[in-house]
Amino acid sequence: MSRILIVDDDSQMREALTVAIHRYGYPVDAAKNANTALEMIKEKDYSLIITDMKMPGMSGLEFIKSVRAHTLTVPILVITGFATVENAVECMKHGASDYLMKPFSFDTLEQAIRGLLNNDFSGDAEIITGDERMLQTLRMAKEVARTDTTVLITGESGTGKELVARYIHKNSNRSSRRMIAVNCAAIPDNLLESELFGHEKGAFTGAIERKIGKFELANKSTLLLDEIGEMPTSVQAKLLRVLQEKEIDRIGGRSPVAVDIRIIATTNRDLIQEIEKGNFREDLYYRLGVFPIELPPLRERPGDIVLLANHFLERYTKQYGKTIKGFSPSAVDYMNSCPWRGNIRELQNAIQRAVLLCTSSLIEREHIIVNNNHRAEPQRSVMTLKEMEREMIIKTLKITGGNRTKAAEKLGITVRTLRNKLNEYQLNL
Ligand SMILES: Nc1ncnc2c1ncn2[C@@H]1O[C@H](COP(=O)(O)OP(=O)(O)OP(=O)(O)O)[C@@H](O)[C@H]1O
Ligand SMILES: [Mg+2]
Picture 1 (cartoon, rainbow, N blue to C red):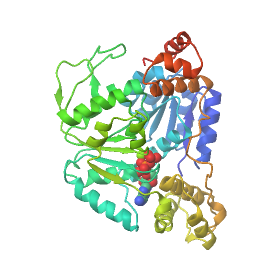
Picture 2: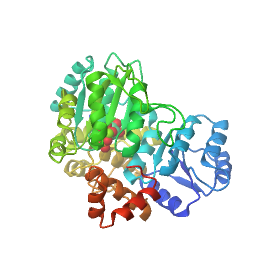
Picture 3: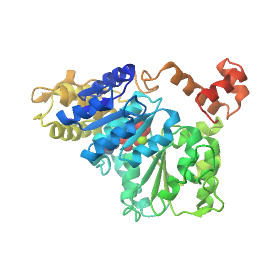
Picture 4: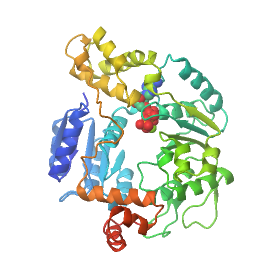
């Protein structure tokens, strides 16, 4: 059973994380400092440790080093504020498995946790389907995999876009190398460019050392640009150049570097609509969409609901050491009648929860808990007011294309206040 340990000196954050993680179905303990956490690790086995960076006493980094001195296997998820990105990178170097930048939504947290706990599944997951349209799509995906064609995968959240991207990479002649993935939605706009292109030492304030970007890391392999609809237009222009010239410019670099990469992009947005709104470049859309793949929502592949439910049932009964034979007829009816707005991910989470709740040999209707008021806007309750303000500012500037006067107007504050807040939050937008 996956037990999670939270380490954070902020009691509100500890509380919020505990409640959220409970809701995902995992048992959880919390420690208010790193020393206590180290004691707890000696007492109990944890499958995941989530730690804050900045804590009085032993810092997050020191803590990670101490944990890694004893065990290399437990995944460590680091939570960090904007100002400590460099520290987060430092943490990754010392053995952290992933990091989340504040503010983050419950959805992002859940995904990060499940990703780390199901590591051996997610890398090489099987695609389960009996749906004719899906099977046809997969046949085509396999064909195109062998070429270097750019692929654009669209579909609602949770329809399996990343899974299909991995399937394409696995069936390509680049599969001996690791696919590199960048989630454009998870990286603040002003950091995305250096994340992708890298930078030379001293290219801008804070560029303490040279950084190799994801494009270069993905050389001779596949680069997955996840949630490309969230990419700011300035970076879109640079991406277009990479696709055309097959070379990149590191920020502050003197000469371009040649790269050989296969790009797969995903989005759950309607890019045509985004083009009309001026958020997405039309020329880039046509470059990317050479081979479009559209994944149907789960409600349009009705036969797959029970098929997938059984697949997940088998996985989670094994994982939790339970003996559950199947679903009761009322549970099956109920699953078939659900809208599954969060698609396969939602079904998967519901079955995982049902397996945990079920104490008999059949999953009953009441074990299946579906969140109906759903997914359009992820819940944000982990955020503080300040974090919300910061996010509002980022979003508004994105909408206005970086125009501060317009952004201030939309936010109902003066340009001067906006400038002060940008300074306060160290936003370089
Ligand atoms: N056909 C399938 N068979 C088995 N598992 C699936 C299938 N489709 C999706 N999944 C699982 O559902 C979850 C969501 O899939 P994935 O992350 O690929 O979706 P996504 O479209 O990228 O979602 P999002 O838009 O939210 O990023 C993953 O755990 C994945 O393994
Ligand atoms: Mg995805």
